Image (cartoon, rainbow over all chains, first blue to last red; front, side):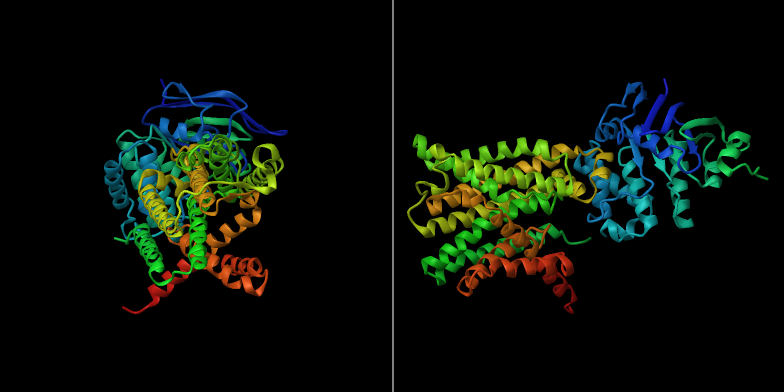
Length: 240
Length: 309
């Protein structure tokens, strides 16, 4: 049984087939990259997986249990946590309270949530800003905070939508280090990113989407050398 | 570590209520005691609306309507079935909360202007239904209802006591996980749901608590004035509540109290000048919404923080 199983998922907006029969599985402990040009359907697929948009058809299984008709909070409680492309934090709450909220909503008791929030604040180098309102944090710090919220209770799978976009290199390394460490401990990740060097470094396997469909799903090096991917992703120019 | 903002606001609101409790020692004029009692009625409505708008980000246009529902629930029980107002009071809370919960389940899936418009429509429908059901409610003539107490001074301290209880309840609520969830929903509903918060449930819970507080305020006010009429639910009354919260400081424990006392007392002071009160308060709301979003409480905090140690 896979951690996440996506079968024949479709979603259309009017005549636009944003996600058109996507199927792939994510095994426990895998770290998968999801790439594709803008408008290829990656974020729509993530919205379906996290319950923010219902699929027109197809099914999504988390840990063998169907989740494609559940509400976002039920999916989060089932263990699929998601980070957004445009950072979403609770701007008028302190960084610490942001983490506490996620911890309590995911079922930790007060003492557990405080202990875990303290640990994550330190691990994500947010100690100096823990009591500031999240809206006062830099863009990179907000990304780290949102990332931390996904890990208040270690998820079955974490979906990260462009986690490295517009992040300072130091923070990028903090984030990448966190992902590497937790992946080594068996955490499952699905990472959407346009940052190819990071995808190459972190993800052994990559899925590439174009025009709503999966056009490649294999080892990352093989995907990046696939002529179909190069054509779709780089507009036909073959990488050196 | 940063000082707990809610704890500071809670202590200051208790201090403010302690000052209010001392006023009868210096002021015995029944008219001004009545003005402060009505201010406290509005403070209850403002605190309830602030729980919804200030802490949960949901802009209902029905706080005065639910005060009217509470007042009529208690008044009709007494008028038709001779039920004691002491039973009418909890009945008012239950009826307002129950109607609030049903309406909440419907409107809490709406956002922004749609939520405001739906609650505004509901408030007007309720007011017109009550105003036109002459055989049951006596329509615009209003209902004469028995008082809860004989003395104005007792009403005064009952209102002070209820406000202390409500502020304490709100303070304790905000310290629990419910307080975290409500503020998270205010800041970003999508993010809250993505982190496991049941957004519709908690928005409905906040709506129900807010309407219960309005119902309690309405029933107490009905007992005090001994007359319940559809005018309690006028949209202008809701406007006054919103002015109080925005001017006092939305999203704080003390702001609605400050706003209610200042706005209502000023309203009475301006009464002799003519019907200019709402013009003045509406203008102040524009100024505060444009320049000082945190209201008078925010201004006071800024002034305090600038002060050299």
